[in-house]
Length: 197
Image (cartoon, rainbow, N blue to C red; front, side, top):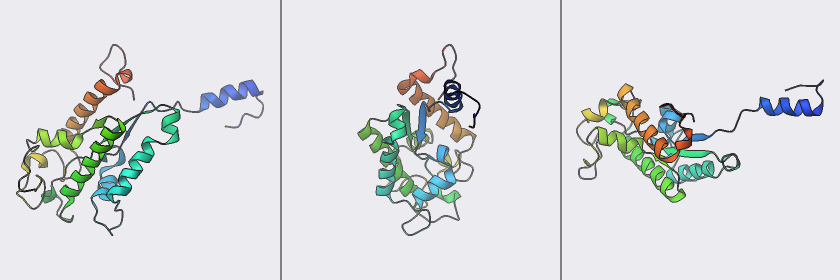
């Protein structure tokens, strides 16, 4: 901002007014805020593939965000969000094993949330519960894996086995609002059902 003709008190007021307020809430770690194709691609890729992010690097990066100076200085409330499960049969172009890898990264988000005392929007578990698949791991094989029968229940929550459809987003919003109400009640706009992050 160029305010050459302003005196310093006016310039200071103009400068301060031109900076956006610090964020109150930061969602991090999911395919919703980061984009399903970018984040899920990086997490679910095999070692050596472009965009792959190994689990240890991923965990370190999440912790870096949690401890980032800007987050601490502004006392920004962070919510971690797990990725949604995938239905591999609807991803014929993809390699096998994505369901297991995505589950592993969702576990990592939950673990970090617990260790760092950061609320977690557990989209992965909410979608598995909605699809009645929460406890359906058979012989170590997750629902949605191409090593078992197709999961029609998971499939109905996504357009293509990866990207959420209306029903998938409904589950996400319900889980997000549940966590906001429990963990960040100050974001609720008084007298309404609306939330302001």
